[in-house]
Length: 486
Image (cartoon, rainbow, N blue to C red; front, top):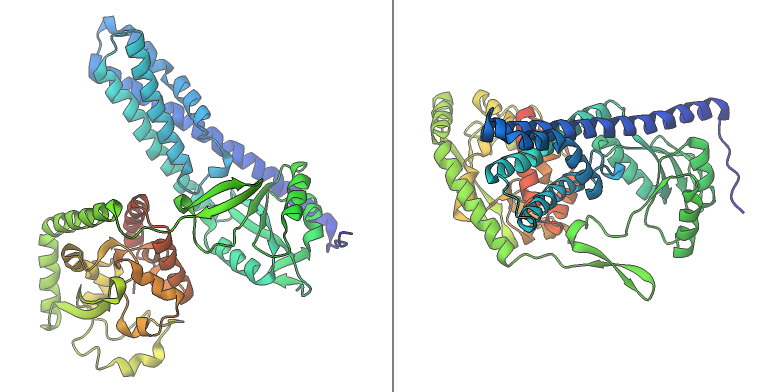
């Protein structure tokens, strides 16, 4: 029999959750309507711009003007068929953008096929301008809408309510991640804890029952999502029964696999003997993709060094005039497969900083192997400004050019750090360290040591060229804000 669920002050809580549920439904519909209007405006603008560029005010091109005016309807139909308005992809992940891109490519293919099959003399210039411009402008506009949504979520708006089901330790870990990464749009409002030891709350999250209470909790608290975490008690039959019971409430069910930080292209569902088995491919650290990554790294590094040469010279002069010490700071770091190399950075500390390390050892603010001080007295005035914008790391482009580092990868570690690595942490050494990485775009020095290691391991396990491009894109935002840089 399900355990009896008791709730303090049920009237007040019920009223609050009903209001929250209505708000969640309203913001989802409102956001999707804004997206649809934005899509239509992008298509109309692209069609009219293409018409003006190709035909100007020519009277014989009225047919193309009508086509431009009908572009919004055509584009919305394509996006609906491509699934670009699926609420599951609102504000997180790349599926939304991939579906827009796939829809645009399909539209181009259909227009080309119809034109060829009907022998229609369509203006190639118009098509080449209108359709790609629609795709590009819509991707940019949707990205801008997403960033506005993330800002609203930081302030607690536009969130989906979730109940977490599992053991107390994994619930605490996921709840902490959801509180920190608000852009995912999930707010944990309650927990159903499995096992004999059931606390009253987990880091401020109320525990309102066990496995037998999930459906009751969903109805009582008007939850949008149930997140089931990996646990031995959740058998296939129990999970099936839970899914059937949640169908009546229209509640999303998410199941976390027992895999740590492995997702995306490496995992596929394979039905075997009626069972949906999760197949995990091994990561690839060699082959054509890595040759492309290496070539991309060196071309970008060489180009950046040439373009930034005046800036590098200016920074070098500023450092030299500061205290007449050396411009570059050289330090031994550990690279791929444990091989050491000399890392180059602009010097940001006093010349005798290493000798004065014992004086500031007690001021260490890091909770792991790193040594970090938010206000390190050894940092020079020029060095403080360089660190704030990560300009001190620009000479590492030399390391990328010679092949010791990559543009994107784990943080380059000191030998003293790698000597103390646990077994799972050595996974970071399977690839080249990076000038930037998940650790930098997620908070840098503000991150806890365990979280920084987890991000590095996640990068190694899920590397792709697209992921590298995403990290490079996000690095501009991280550097401009200066979060975690000290």
